[in-house]
Image (tube, rainbow over all chains, first blue to last red):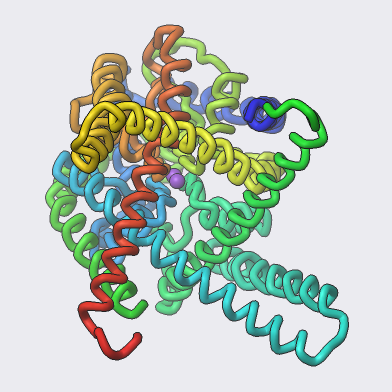
Amino acid sequence: MALLALAHFMYQMVGATIFQMLEKEAEDHNHFQLEKLHFLANCTCLDGLHMERFVQVIRDSSKVGLSLKGNQTMDSFWKFTSSAVFAATVVTTIGYGNMSPSTTAGQIFCVFFALFGIPLNMVVLNRVGKYMLAIERNACDFIQGKTNHRKLTRFMIHLLSYLSGTALFFVMPMVVFKQQEGWSYSQAIYYCFISLSTIGFGDYVADSNPDKYYPEWYSILMASWIFFGLAWLALVINHTGEILERLNTHLKHWWSPEEPS
Amino acid sequence: MALLALAHFMYQMVGATIFQMLEKEAEDHNHFQLEKLHFLANCTCLDGLHMERFVQVIRDSSKVGLSLKGNQTMDSFWKFTSSAVFAATVVTTIGYGNMSPSTTAGQIFCVFFALFGIPLNMVVLNRVGKYMLAIERNACDFIQGKTNHRKLTRFMIHLLSYLSGTALFFVMPMVVFKQQEGWSYSQAIYYCFISLSTIGFGDYVADSNPDKYYPEWYSILMASWIFFGLAWLALVINHTGEILERLNTHLKHWWSPEEPS
Ligand SMILES: [K+]
Ligand SMILES: [K+]
């Protein structure tokens, strides 16, 4: 446990240092933008109080997904389809946060909705994951019956199913997102991973740009991608967890073979 | 499986409808704010293009956590402590998104950091959860040795540990957040649940208001709260999942006792 806790702590500290290193340089850019803001503030006829109020309005409107470009009339943000997407981000614990309940009643309901919705979703995704594993095992049995290299076949099937999952849930969506959302490949792969790992920063959210028109099939593809992708990545992450757990046991034996920690 | 999938689907649809009902009325308010924005736009000397650029600057600066009130010089956003908090929101999959990597290198590193960090964190939290269960079991054994009502004692201990967890991870932080962040009780409890369930919308984030000064002990309390609270709520959610799984099995038997679905 002590070794594991130490590894966890070190991992965090190293990660924090690297994030800081990588993102510090981008901050100068942001500082430049703040300068620009001050400059713009000086050249308008807005005084301090009006300015602050104006900034608040823009931030609030940004939170509820209103487009500020042009004068087009917007769809309602809490229309049924986006409510359904929001409900899905709650039960999957992705929680992009581009939409979130602002009323007290909505917030209280959200807590109870999540309290039962998250376990329910977990149970369903576990089932889907088990079906996926069953398909893999059937393929394994089928091919192993026709060959003598049993261990090699097993390894190849594992590798193949891992690669096909990566292609289906990362490479294919990446191409679609690049085309539909206008993101770069690295932004698209970052979005895929951040979504399927249920981190869901909400810095990039597909199918939610109020200035874009999306084709009909896009929402359905998105929903299937999230649903099966979550089940698949949960399998992969659980598998990685098991490997780490085994590694920890091995290391502990190797570290102190006589004294149990 | 079919029954479970149907229940899941119905749950989503009902949830989406209720969210829509609850949040629709708040939208009129937002529409009013948009009107205000148009009004403000008309009374300034900014033309359309400058206006859009100005809005973009405000939104970007909001993303990187810059305070726009007054002229105070800001701390760096990616200082080490906030980087560490960010790394923690990645591995716990909370992902508030109030900070997120903006550089390509940062985004790619974030993917790999999460790929190993999430399983590692899961393993550590599982251990912590097991220790918590062990404490409960020891208390159970200790008290059961002194009484005859074994089943009642077991139930009481379960109830007591559940209630003390709620007090420790919801009621106590709620009071602290109300005082430190100036949130209402309902907002504070909403924040507690959204954080510990790892949804993490990021609409409320403690210890991150650039216009507030926080005491020294606040970050440490936050970190312990998240760490032990996550382990505890994971236990509760897993337990709820098991109950749902058992309920599903019971219902299936009751629904179709002769034909296996
Ligand atoms: K999340
Ligand atoms: K999130």
